[in-house]
Length: 337
Image 1 (cartoon, rainbow, N blue to C red):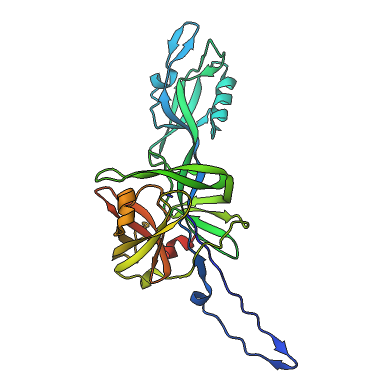
Image 2: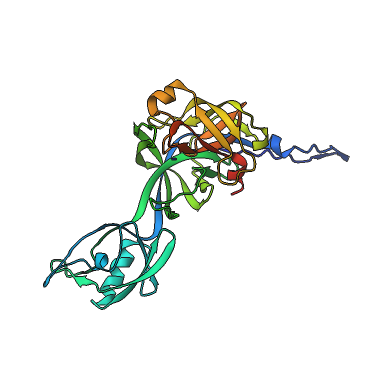
């Protein structure tokens, strides 16, 4: 679930005039901190730090069909992270390692649901390509979309998503290509009870908006393009989670095209001490958003939450049994990173 925000810090400089000293006035931190509200969808590329197995296949050799990977116990969802002790991070790395084997037995290091194991198998030469293969269909990158939550106006640092990024097997992903692109939402799969909906978007490859350099438990972080037009972004203060209250609030999300819209929600619960990115329970009350998406859908993660005109957090998760409800992370937690 995946948009943008901005931070501005005011700087006060003391001045001395003709022998007299003008007293300085200290600005409180909370008065100096301002953020641009985003809500736009961004696209990015992530890596599983290995070759992820997404299918098993035959290898057609001179003596018939072979399935080396399947016979050795490799499963769909496994990630090959090394061959004979040499790290594998891409498809090219795996292919090179298999060619080096010359058809001799190799030892694969495989990650499965957080655990690792070693698997021995013998690559087979494909009679058509004359390349050594093990009978797997693999991928090394995954494209995703999410919502940028804030951008620091002085440093152009941004934060997005508000939660960790994992593959289907809950393995954490890392940044593959640091480029972050503006994404145009072209459709919505509505959320229903028991099934999360999702935004469907297209990367606008001619509209790079930043570069990412960090993925962690609270989201995706990086540096925004200084030439981005922030004139349409609303400037607000942030508020600590301790200031949040049960009641009306708003979120900014993009569910069509590239322009964020403001939608009404209600905060049903505030959990200041939660360290699992679940500081708020929110409920979508805006009829427009309910009509368009059914509530919270994948791709909306990172949508900024405002209450009383201040930035307090971002949307992170949807309740599967009720897509009108979900969790939000406090902006304090995101700014820690």
